[in-house]
Length: 280
Image (cartoon, rainbow, N blue to C red; front, side):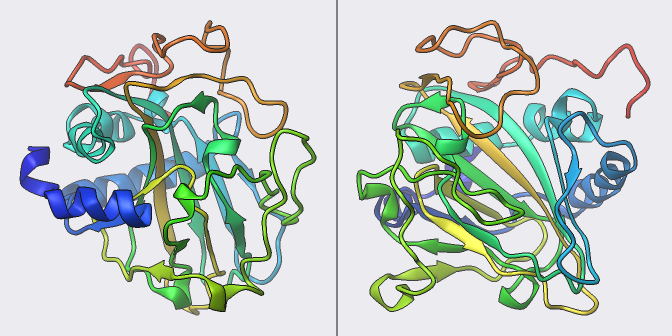
């Protein structure tokens, strides 16, 4: 149960820093199954799958909405404690999945993930919003661990999304220019967590974060990134950033009532959209 995993101290850290690290949330058997399934994702990528521009001898890959196509990713939402965990951290009665995303930075991949917030990329407004990051490999700064600007979710600012290939901020009048966090590192409290497979990082979707490349010569950095919202969230239509994998049939400002965004807490029947066809 989520109450056995998330303490009140964890909730306080999430609210203060905008990020909390929970250890050993996913067991080794499920981690192994997800690793295998991720390889199948990359063998047959979905419509939003891509390789980022090569900046070295490694490879940086990405895909989205695996839970719709791959049973192990569906089980992660339908049969794990994740929904209860994020609901407790958001102090929300309910939790809805917005998307699951996979990232893989192979050894010797220098691609930096630029400093950014998740919510300006997302199709959700509200304060009860969070992102999860679950490594499937041992991760430290050398292999591309995430770094977080502690407390940045409380700045009251939304920054323009950056392109993950070029690092350039996308042009929109709705958001502000991201400060040069790298140049200003000494002005901020920057956190990172060395993680083992099955650990879970949860951050507020307005917490600024980024990651270095994978400079390891022999360690992969595979991770699942997750987006969740709670009671106060509504559907948003942005003029920049990614879009849902298909039209969810929602108007801007509507609550999340769509099979594309399943309720994961309280435990519900996450639709088996992958059923009836051979898994990808």
